[in-house]
Length: 470
Image (cartoon, rainbow, N blue to C red; front, side, top):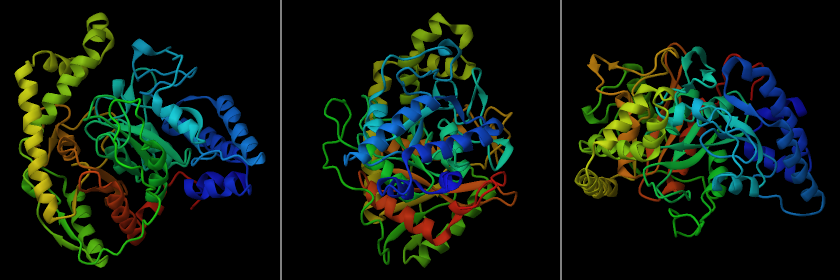
């Protein structure tokens, strides 16, 4: 049974480990075998710490033998995004400057996951400093889309999404500023969830969100249960009562109003293959009993809001590094950082005020519609040799991030949004839909995403290169 364990869901693996039907060590070894077989062709896990993982897996098995609770993630292998620090495990941030960096402590999210029984086995690839929705860097190279090795997997949590799609991991962590959880999940036929700010405790930045990636919505809910545990020691941590996101995921959606738009109400250019998948999803929602209407809120200010605040973040995060190592940072990061340095206090003030007004207006819209369904990305997976998309349907993109407006406009609203598998292009490339919910209504978003997943079963379609089936 060990060989096939990596094809089981995370939820099922926890059940098997807790029931002592398999050991955490068995589960780990199954995933390590999969990594050995698959990772050389996709380059998703860039640092492997197998012995570290074996030690943690044995600790889980020992706790179970002694009748102790190993945690909600009992024995699940995980590799952390290479932007978060891992004690004694190489952490490069995708940068040549930190190519040999080994932290002496974990990021809080890593301690949280390990404390819940997760078994750390390494790091997943990310673009340099997580900038751009295309996973490549000069330390490890590019991560390839398992559905077509000539295409990008998206980013910036690209290594995580590919590791999930190829069954090298059952769960993965990631982060999302302008789409870095949702875009790679969309490109790799898995689930990525950007929550409301503070739902997953993090630092002061309410625009950059830590969150879960998984193979199924139920597995995503399981991981969110752990990641969303309130932490008073962290600046941005919700004071809302912690709920069990895995409970009551089945729901009757008859009469639920949904706003659905395949092109953001004409506000964005969207590839026709993507538009078709989103439009076709309306049939599924109606089959679930929802009332789906073709409408989208006005998000016109969101572009300037996001770009201003992103540039400000870049100036704070990378300004000093670029000053010291201008020749070791890619041009797009330098450009974005310079944009941030040119901002004034008034620019930031106006952007934050506009963001508050945007939130208020979209919140009003969401009182009429419980959910908003949109494209995740404006294009399907593209050539991995292409750094970013510069034109969509005849419309030129102004910057290297404009092709991701479909994600970052939603980021600016502050609302929770999940990417769930929704179909494929005629050439077999995955396309997801983005389900946006009301503020702090993550559980409702998971409910609708699961209903859609169960109705369509698109997540069951594995990359051709995998020899096994679910």
